[in-house]
Amino acid sequence: ISVINCTSLINPGGPLLMSSCGNHFGAKCNFSCTSGYRLNGSSTVTCVAPGNSPPGSWDSPLPICQGR
Image (cartoon, rainbow, N blue to C red; front, top):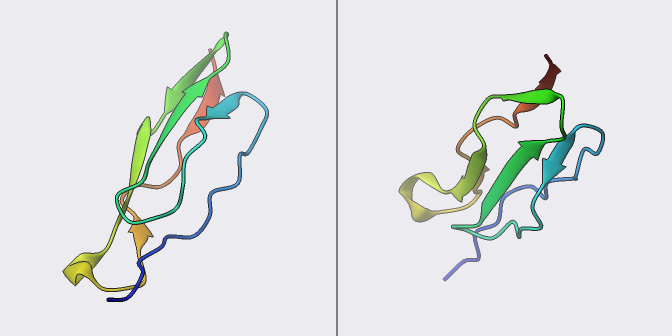
């Protein structure tokens, strides 16, 4: 059985906050913004694999934080 991984997510820093999360199949990463910013995009991305075979991919693009 092959191991399915997604690309490692690098914590972007700045106003975008990322929970510590793995890059294995089924991993979920949660995002939020610091005070004064609003999240534009999905607050959670999940490592999925179409057909359950590598390579894995994140099911949503990373969100961005926008100033109010």
